[in-house]
Length: 366
Ligand SMILES: [Zn+2]
Image 1 (cartoon, protein in one colour):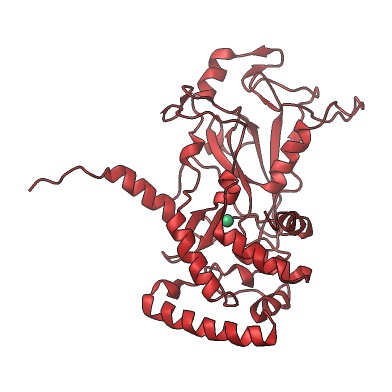
Image 2 (image 1 turned 90 degrees about the vertical axis):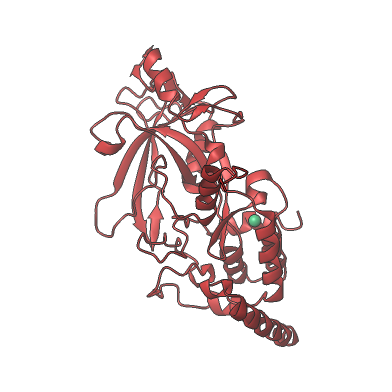
């Protein structure tokens, strides 16, 4: 009997890959991990303007319009899966985040709150299209390429600061970039600088890189003389970012919330929990622990993880147990050689400093 084509196999494959997060997309720009004692790694690129419905993109005409130059997104990495967070992506309700906020609301200890945030709340990322001009300072394989980049908050904040600056600061020797930086005919080149911090990357030294004459420039052509055909060609290579946003899967979120509320003082998720037998036993054990904990009025796991020495190295970095990561360090990106069950798209920088925790706390009660 012939196979019916009730299901679109290509679509299913791409969905499965996206959900598991176990594939690399060659159109994505991912900064490499900076190494100790090595010079900072630099990249120079333009942020490209948002596309509108019908605009020609790398994969055909756009079906949706980007309202801004970026798409905000965030993922929970739980159950060895990457699950889009509806709160970050759509300003929607997210049971996992809500559970995190509830737990955070139960303690006034900042370190405990930070540990809960680290374990349960996603980092916020901003997805953009970027263009690497064909210059020596860029790695050869990126020259002239358009990639999409899921940039961390540290970098986005610099872009936002530029957008909200009204003038150049008044110093002709040190003018500041200001206003719209992604106008294809009048753009600022951005220099991303990657240095090692803790186990992750730090991008704090990145900046808009003004040309020698302190001018903004077209993304192709010379200042005041944009090369329109070339610009059009670059813009047509933008990627459909809506396709790259992690899926929000309500059923997964519901299941995880059920698990979490059954073991709210447990140690988070690990690979074994997907095995039904053990998961059941652990849930039962966690429930018992929870009962005990309630009697004591304590959240032992939280205080345990926040009282850990900050620099304690983990011999097995592949386990995405966020609570184990020292508060001041960015989580490690899961290594490429990680076992199959580890998501390879763990965030490379998840800022969890006090400001971020305060910002999250502001959302309590939403
Ligand atoms: Zn969430």
